[in-house]
Length: 151
Ligand code: B12
Image (cartoon, rainbow, N blue to C red):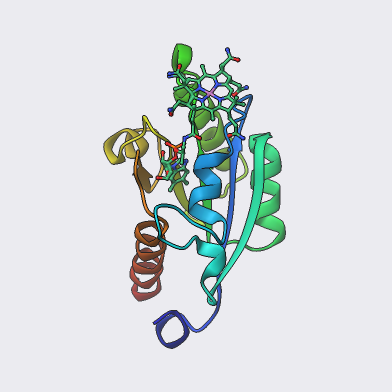
């Protein structure tokens, strides 16, 4: 479907940013092995995946997305003590806006205490919480790209 309807590989860049060291969630979505028997995005022939791991700065993540001309940025936030996940996510969005990049990438936030309404309220296109399967994320990105293509 990607080959036929998008006509190019979908490029995604992901990381767990800030001081958060939890890599397992973003790996579950991006790495070939995937999660709960559902293959990760690396396994898809028509996805090109850059997984930067954890404790990456928001600037580094954004710069990587620019350098590979990514279609989507995937931000993981696991630690929520003192609302650090919200503050760091807001910092990420602020940096996107300061660089005039709003609308250039599909912005996705994920983590065990993230849900779609929270992610949208923080300025993301979509949010994914506990138990998310990689295929749900792949489907969302594909569908959103189709929508944007039709606009
Ligand atoms: C493993 C683990 C660690 C490992 C991490 C190793 C690693 N390489 O990731 C280590 C030992 C390093 C660690 C450290 C700490 N941890 Co820890 N850790 C855990 C633990 C046990 C499991 C997390 C995990 O791997 N889950 C499995 C993955 C698959 O699930 P997930 O992250 O939810 O991801 C899924 C979804 O959320 C979603 N998702 C996640 N990210 C994204 C991103 C996108 C874009 C999308 C679409 C989806 C998505 O998809 C995934 C698949 O469904 C949890 C407790 C628990 N049982 O959850 C505590 C936990 C997360 N840790 C916690 C804490 C407090 C810490 C420490 C602060 C402890 C300390 N005092 O030092 C440090 C923090 C270090 C730091 N700087 O971040 C707390 C967080 C509390 C909070 N609410 O903030 C927890 C909840 C434990 C607890 N009950 O207190 N931890």
